[in-house]
Length: 439
Image (cartoon, rainbow, N blue to C red; front, top):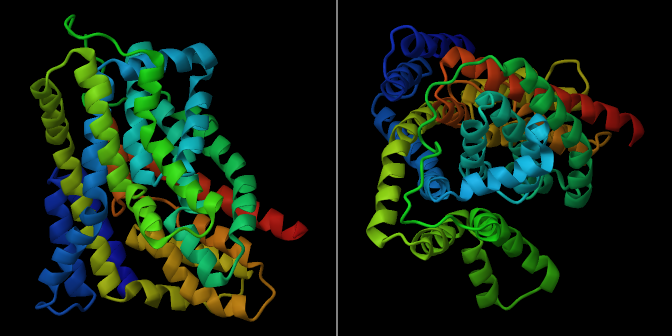
């Protein structure tokens, strides 16, 4: 019964947004309330579920997205993104630039959370698209496939790290196996699959579009452009490496490193530095830089509301207990434990939307299989990670980030983003099963 309720609600959500053109945020609220009632959440608890859904998802994403949008807007309008794009094209040529974006996404995605990597690198994609008149979705998918794989498969991302701890796996071996699986998954879901998306038409890409620079402002140099745009990456890598390099540190030093290395603080530091290096240093006044930031906030507000709506729906799924109910129903299926783990995570992902929730919920179900022996815990981490990326759609904030940034219809977003995630998930499972033969 719960599964039927979810399917009907998701179908109605798609119809409301795509056919009746109802605002996505309002549609999410209505559908979430209907789903909550249908799944048995008491009416008196539904308002709290809605509040928690908004707070939980925006609490972790708002600062990252807003500060990242500000940084991206300044990188674009200062000419830094144009400078970086020129260097990328010089290295790879316009014919192979998608491979350059894929490599960049993979390298940046290892230390960065997905949301940070998205808002950090998307201005680079848009700059290349606008300057060299290349297919936007093709370019974006090549980069985002790499970001998605690192998010789902590889430590130090939250879900893989949590799964490693739950299964008592070896984080180093998980990382090595994950890298082996990640490479074919990224290539197939990125540049190769992207070739089928060349004809997808996007709406106007206004957020980070190239603008003519004011003659009063000087163009930043290559070093300044790269170092400022990639500063969040450098800071996060540094914060991650210091504990391993120096071992046990005094408590206060460790606290400072953890604080400076947190995503929100990293983005704030990067924005402060960019305000000087790409703003004041290039001849802009403080009020001019602030005007750029205000425009970025205006552009990002609708995206935040849509993400908040998806958070409400996800919270309804969690509070109703339907995630565990579905997972338990699949536990008795006569299939290989690694395939079963992938399948459970995939079903929860499709129903709930959150990759992290899908992976961790599935972990609780397959835990007995690990404790009974016979299953490599490192491969189970990767199997659940692959399943947790399966078919992202309207209940996933990543789906809406991609749709709104690229100004696509829901149909084209499913055709591109959702299928890309599906390819990553399936290739990941195939890779796990191949490794299982030899390990």
